[in-house]
Length: 214
Image (cartoon, one colour):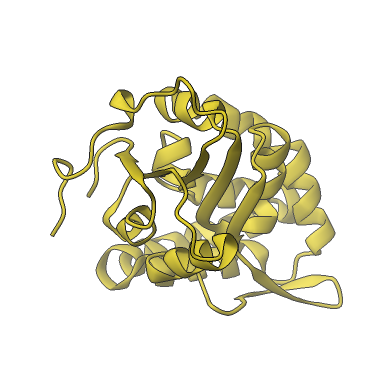
């Protein structure tokens, strides 16, 4: 299994002369210092659904944690998506994503990753987070050209709490999304922070890691 010694740290990744390069980065633990998306799910739950929805996601958080660490990253995130979004108007989620979340995301921005990410001419983010929740921040504040994230299902304008195919964007799903988006061409830089990021990182010409890989 690959280790942190296999890939160099983003601290040592040059950022000069990257204007024509394409960078592909993970979000939690890479663009952001924090590796857990739970606080942001909880914030959306509270802002849209109030204290009862916040209590609901808090009650389900132990289940999500057990699934995340003992079963799969995807299973844990599916529980958070359901707890936070089920029954909510998609327009309300979008409003919170645009008006509330950016200041919290910005305060957790990883300085070394941002140095490299911001230096590149084309910027793409691959994330397990629901795209509807993170896209406003990534595009409007970080200048991302493309955001590939988990898609949530909706009916009559309300989120069902379930995710669309191909499921949560982790592991091979991230790699497949990258191949589809770039038509098989290799982006210059791949930035990630955990073993499940290796699948897409290996498709890039230069690989760097942020933080420590579990």
